[in-house]
Length: 252
Image 1 (cartoon, one colour):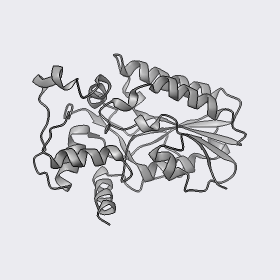
Image 2 (spheres, helix red, strand yellow):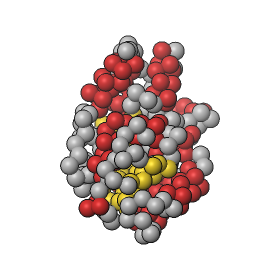
Image 3 (cartoon, one colour):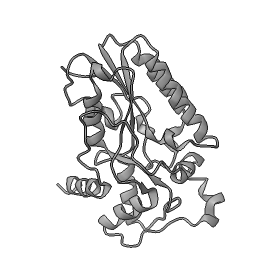
């Protein structure tokens, strides 16, 4: 059957809308536009209000199963606002969905990237212009997820057997934002991408929001989050293969 979606206008929503789901399933991906390290924090504006409203709207579905897309980075346990408050909203949405009237499960997704990402295209343009970026600490490792793998994970989770569960969908190779973006830059011909130095933090905050700085510094557990969505494996378990696919797709 065709899918029904809350948040269909997002990049992930457009990809998901092209798929078919087994049975009468509704997907809530409200807020997933912010689930990436590629937007410099600006996508968190109005996040709490919009995401809570999206969860409540999704609960009005008449579907047999509701799959709620959430955020794997909450495992990092942010200690300071504003990221701590964002994480609290994310957990509130999960609780709201799991305690609601529709049989539901939660899928916590890794940081999204892919060929449909407008933010990644913006980074490509910035690198070509020689602009530096806020890279964060080299040792803060995070889990990412290709957009195509996010779609397949959400579809795989859409089963009555997963009702009441919190599941994970991430790639298999944790990597810092610095390494992720430096590898991307090299793939578009920028061998030595520039990083904004720490001394420039007071000035870069005029462009990069505090949320992004906190995210780039927030390490996730060394072991891949579990339980993984049953029966699902990422096609791009290594982010480097995912970046190769993006470059190939852009060059078609």
